[in-house]
Length: 608
Image (tube, one colour):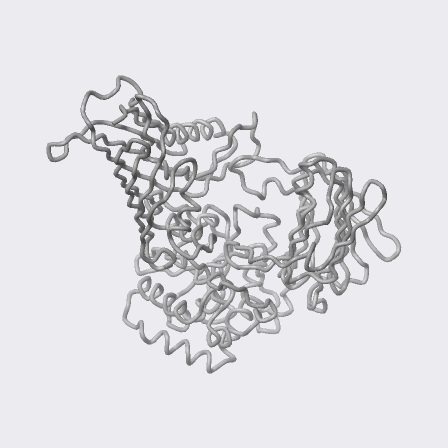
């Protein structure tokens, strides 16, 4: 059971979990955002009626930072005591709202609160309870449900209650957006009425304006530009930064300005310890001078810096397609992933994301292919424009991995010497993985990613592995133990992983869209000195496959290099289309099978 009680000063939460099996014990643990939780208490109720209350510091502990795509958060991890089968776990907490006079939702929710009422396990009852004295003028409540899902609405004793019964467990759908399995969803968002504000600013009362343009000319301008107009010191510091890049063409200048900004202001993800959330709020000048900021603050500063330099910069607000989906298009606050756009003299777009730790240039893959809100600033406030746009998908050639390896067979283990380079979003992905490991050295960090089965890392070297401004380039050595026998199979690429998660089994049918991580290209080549004799008759047949999602190729052949025979295996995986409708389900399964087969192939060779 889940209960959300919306009160004037915050949200009171109550969660009750009935544990019925050993597997169900894992769902009794709860992780909460520590920055928004107070008055946390709970108990475990056993079948004989006895209770065990939660103890702070023992059953409720602060954990290490949660690593998200943009920010770090500190969490409270709740470990209910004594959980066994057939017990009940009760947890209650409060999420205060310090901005209740301005909006009815807590500050961390912005102006668009999205709640999924489904869970990984079935939910017997979910309730949304609203005190009737909450001021939510201008706010809209909307539900999105699966076919057949219905809620009841009851109003009495000063509260309104919306209740769902018997919500099924969330479906597990391979390679789908999480947003497709979150229903029923409750969305509570601000729908601003800005006509009076526009009239006050001098916009003709009888002239029509759509909600996008009206919002751009009122509060978006107020948020993004007014701080610069009011702060001469901020303006002077930005002008000093911009002066050093004068004379450069637009794209080169935009890149140089973002690098200069990031040289002064770090992202939160770069910190080992997360600053207290109460210190997050700060005006642009304070952020610039203190040297760190949230992703929003960095993108805001980036916008002001590019604007002050004279570049024509566009605000682009997108939706994370892996986490959320487009709800009511009029909810402009759901577009919460900010980018900056700059055109060059030829009309070519450069997208910038100063708040991204490892991808400040370009568009992260989870924003590509989705609808976005584009705000086009102008010289005069009442000429600002806004419209919907679609963020283009990157070409596979812009996100690459290239592996080159040499294998030296041994009596008990084969030795691998590997060089590896990545570009674009693939490079950012590797840096993000290494950063998330929080390993003190490159070898340990790579080992946590590459080591599996019998493959063990022995050495690793690389420069700028966590540098957002360079490609990703490392080299490493490793050993792979093998079984006895006269003949054996040498895996040419034991260190290589699939570019997307391939499930052990597939559901029979699919009704939701297909989401591969990104368009990309992976090339790998492994060379092994050939001791002599002919190649085995089977096992080295080439694999060449292609469909709507991309191409898979695997070949192996003897080549002569400086008079010596070398067995060379080559692999190429290219994802050309990362998004697809359910109608391409069979093609997805076929493509996944080819990737799996290519990665699993080995070289059948005699034992030395």
